[in-house]
Image (tube, rainbow, N blue to C red):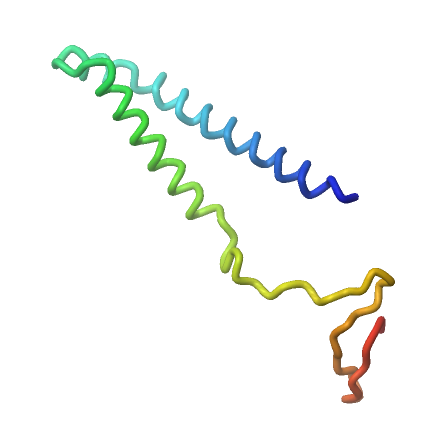
Length: 103
């Protein structure tokens, strides 16, 4: 169970990189004539690559801003739990009493 979060993180990272690569490939294929026109007007290959890289960076930034959860990194930490499974924090029951441990 200890490796599951790492495996999930790696899988999501691979999926995100693959998604970005396919988005860039689709954009370049769709705009092939436009990019050829830019080269015909005098741009060199490095300038056209810089345009594609800039657009890729913008796509990535928008995806990160839209896709991140709200308050990412600012959420409340999970309650402290001992190795035996007992909660260290107090909680109030329905009748107003404060208790520790499992409900």
